[in-house]
Length: 200
Image (tube, rainbow, N blue to C red; front, side, top):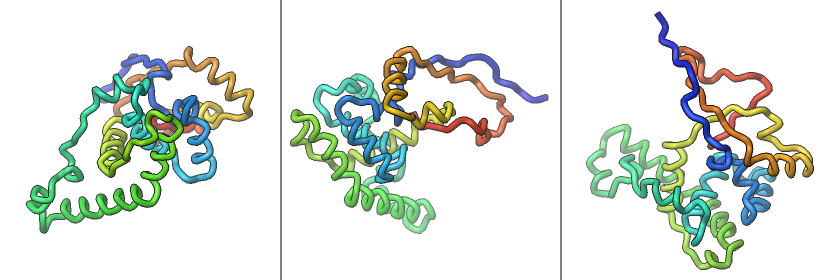
């Protein structure tokens, strides 16, 4: 007999979720983030990571109470010291960790560091904050340990005219996401053809 999960597990006001749309609506960094996304400089996942890094470093961020509750380090091998990592030599995990670290470091040096500093410079109080690789490592870990892939109507994810965007912003406080328990045997990759998935 198949076990089925039913009922509403949680109802979350959309304003309390850090989503790509929420980032684009931010009064400080929203316009620049929109340009980065539309120009293909970043995708929706990296956009959220950049926002996490900037808000964590920005004095007086509205997200500070939430960000302060999040862990500052992780048990992943990406966070291992050199001595700890040396214990893994000869394993596939050791090689995979080195490859991933190199990839993250390259992304940070070539793109992420400059973009986050640019977002911080929008706020004079954060213009002198130094952005470190550890900030990117933290944001990457936070994203992949907490992000949910949420299906929403295509028209909500990809906003249309400026008028539509303003209307969406005006109504945003009333929007809610129902995170419902799904059929445990369902295909998680399936979704209606008129929806898009967002990270939040």
